[in-house]
Image (tube, rainbow, N blue to C red; front, side, top):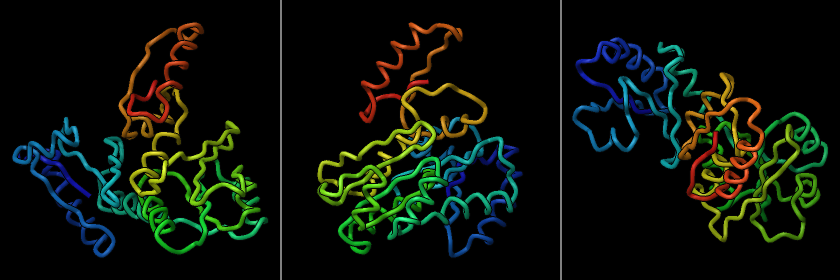
Length: 246
């Protein structure tokens, strides 16, 4: 975890003892660093630091989650948040009954269909499952389980799919031979949200913390034609190096 601070900042000074206490509580689970953003200006620009203090959690070196400004900044709150983010692990799904239970219980999930539940591909998926993406990760080598998750049992493995129960859709991961933690993390981060998002207080944190560039549309509620064009553009950029549409 990284604390971007400024020595002269009152709020940075106030956080310091709580952050130090959280570092003690998280010893062995996470390393908490302090970064003087007034000195490490290049690193501060990379993380788009605009205020002090700003906290980021990085897991596996390929994805970061920001600690929202509206969260409590005490040692307990910080340590609980970090513990929650790093406790996610990929779960094995080996039988039909277990798969049915998961499909009924989870709203958004990613399933890897692998030749074996151990080895390099499983390790890549496990590394992503520990990152702060807020998506449940599962893996199976059972063709019948894969079929329940809308994966063709005859597909070339490893295969990966994301399912969203609420909108009843799914998306197969087109990794083009690159079944890596970076590619998987990008896939999960991009597709866990719909192509066009209506900004609400409930979804605000997910929207702000999403690593994609964002394009915002400000329009009256009944501008159906404009919104329709906006959605077409969003689908065209889906999965590419383009913006999220809001």
